[in-house]
Image (cartoon, rainbow, N blue to C red; front, side, top):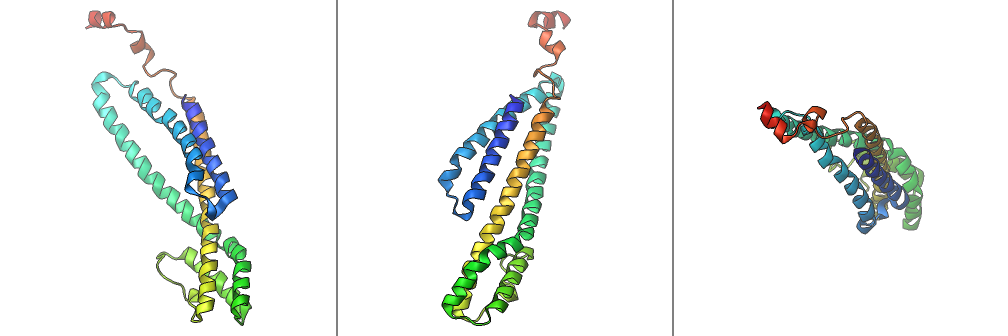
Length: 216
């Protein structure tokens, strides 16, 4: 069950990444409901059986200590997992900024032509620098100098192209993180094979209530 849960959860993440790759920023909330259901089923097949399996190996007098330790490790794992995922995600956003700017550049060029803007080559160079600086910025509210344009039409064209570039880079980073998480789940599913086959130790499972009373 644990192995199946890990694989089903990984399938849900891979399906999610396929949707992101196909729809990008136009992905609607209702479209991700099926993949969330698949991932949720897989996650459910992992969590409860794992807790039962791990705590079942602990002697009764150590159950409180084991439960406290398990909760501590869970909280620590979630905190570190979220932090690590965030680091990887924003690193991927920065890494994808160049491709995102290239993909949004034709849209910007068309908008600049419609606005009658001159020096389009320089404006396109400013746009690429703007996207890169935004991806590398620690403060997302800070507007880089190359993003600021005095001409309202040029500023509007930049705003639309920047939104397009952001959606491309974020979609790419999100897809990478989903595939990474799916790979981790597959590794975890393989690791489940090393765990005990039963939720109770063999000697405890073989002990009947009558024999326990005799032993006492």
